[in-house]
Amino acid sequence: MAKINAADLPPDPALLEEAGRLIRAGRLVAFPTETVYGLGANALDAEAVRRIFEVKGRPATSPLIVHVNSIEMAHGLASEWPSEAQLLAERFWPGPLTLILPKAACVPDAVTAGLPTVGLRMPAHPVALALIREAGVPIAAPSANRFTELSPTTADHVRTALGEAVDLILDGGPAQVGIESTVLSVAVRPARLFRPGMVTREAIEALIGPVEYAGRLENGEGGAHPSPGMHPRHYSPRTALLVVTDPRELPAGRGVCVHRSWRLPSEVVGVRMPESAADYAAALYETLHRLDQQGWDWIAVEAPPEGPEWAAVADRLRRAAWSKVAF
Image 1 (cartoon, rainbow, N blue to C red):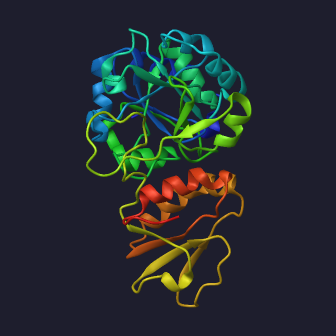
Image 2 (tube, rainbow, N blue to C red):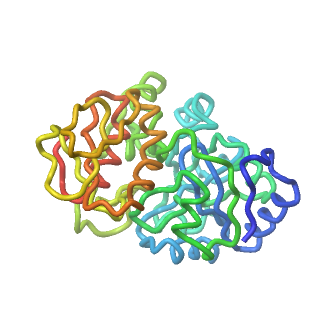
């Protein structure tokens, strides 16, 4: 399996040419974005897109995000482009914001779980943008991991999770944002926030006005999900993950506590996290991947603070926890 090393950026043109050829041929290429690594296929090729679902073990009810390298490419995938979409794309693209819009006829139902809408994003990573340009087609890509498991923020995470199921991995170094994009529907009025991310609801509202929060699906709800990232259990390590609000809540057994500022009992192993929301998000999945390989009985995570800048981290921890948490 070929790869592009982060040290070689910008990547070797021959390797990018091979990646683009594979995408056009209906194969799968894992590639870096600023959020997490994606498992990509030609978004206009329904058979190629179905391979993504097979490799990930992802249910067909969970739609994919389509990655573009220009606003003009996005226009060709949407049957409508409201003024809100233009304002948001001009302000936040390239970047960690996915816009849900009415889809164009060229977008296969396999991408959108049969829904009449499609999620579009322009990633802020030079390798991702170069790959789309080289392939000459938009690229459908969820995170490059097994469904519901921890998202990958390095090429090694992709190799560990998917192995030889991927035809090629482009290594662009560690993801800088570290958690998945904000997902916002501008196909409805008012706009509706389906997944919080590091582009906050408040930043969006400052640009286009009030935004509704869609909440989250509960276990047992059927039918197509209105957005990626809506599954109740998601982003989970294989080790039991607990979210706690006080060190006294830590269970017995051989565990590790991920925290920002707690004074832990001497017998408890702790991992100190950054104080800022952005730095915390960038480190979260890498930390959980590392701890997940160490054989702990449990991983406890200090509940994040309240506040809009922490909403995305709180969402990921709620979904990753092995039991429901109230924060």
